[in-house]
Length: 214
Image 1 (cartoon, rainbow, N blue to C red):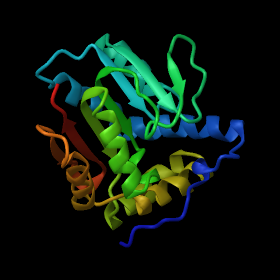
Image 2 (spheres, helix red, strand yellow):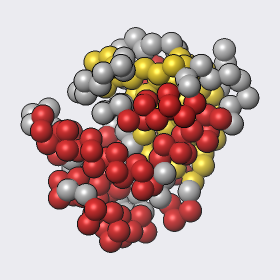
Image 3 (cartoon, helix red, strand yellow):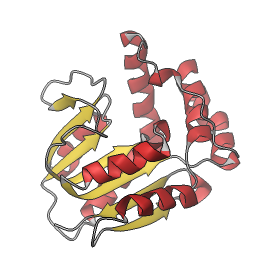
């Protein structure tokens, strides 16, 4: 599959607030069905160093932040260009590619990378390296199998707009080889930085695990 560059409805700067809220609800359901939050928790629990604070980049409705705080008791903070207002959560408004990011032990982002260009992904990784010792990037994989499975099993469970955007998200995603190449380019100038990639069965998701020197 050739990578699509067509934008998604969710990327529109003029998206109505009500539709954005519905997207957040549908994304929460998708993350639950795909096990996104459990996957991030598993990677965090396997960290050999203490994880006291987690930064969620592109945190949307803040569901992952609430999940990690409840399950792991960690401090959490988010950043998003169009953040939701969630009582009890600290969410900054900003572009994580260029903004000064809050300090955290681990930064995470889920389903964000396919919204960015290769150059933006590289810049994001380099920016995160300035404030966190580890960066977990979870995203979809561009491949006919997850596209078929998403269409058949997930689209009937979510709104029409979220279904269309989800299909487009898969078409816009990077293959594991492409994403690993991007990450290696990003850390090439950072002494001691490493990256590993984990690909789930059925190509339902991939996780880049980047570690930076203290």
